[in-house]
Length: 171
Image (cartoon, rainbow, N blue to C red; front, side, top):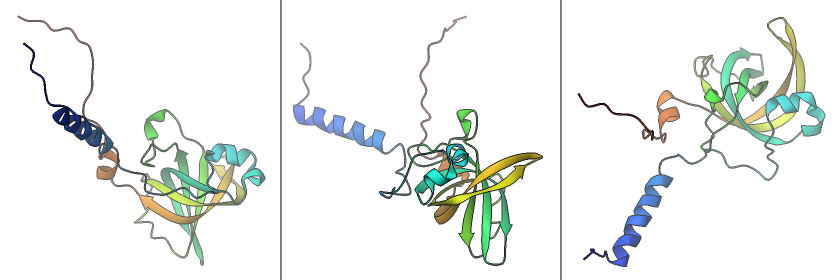
């Protein structure tokens, strides 16, 4: 005779399972505004006037920081973001470069080259520049908020469980 579990126990197990799955991925760090668009930097570079004054949540890998007398500029190689707004650098290629403009001075030690960053801001236009010897159009974003990700933050919430089919041999 099969053992039947009380329905309240089954509901409790189901709720606990769903909560543990929801706890796997951290929540997004920035809330989109009503003016936020989901367009990658390379698309904005092709027609910057079309996207002027739109809000974005972009991220990527920091290429370099340049400080000027009244602002700083962070050149970033853009990548798609995951559900927690962390840059997904393992997708096989970037989304193009952009320049994040921050008022005042930015300490390059706090924004080191190669670090991953997510930011919110408003598209303010574009500028011509170079990547190596090649001409390039960089969308510019006036930064409202930014977050440089630590290695621990990039790993948090990622599953260590994998499924597969294999062949076992017993000697």
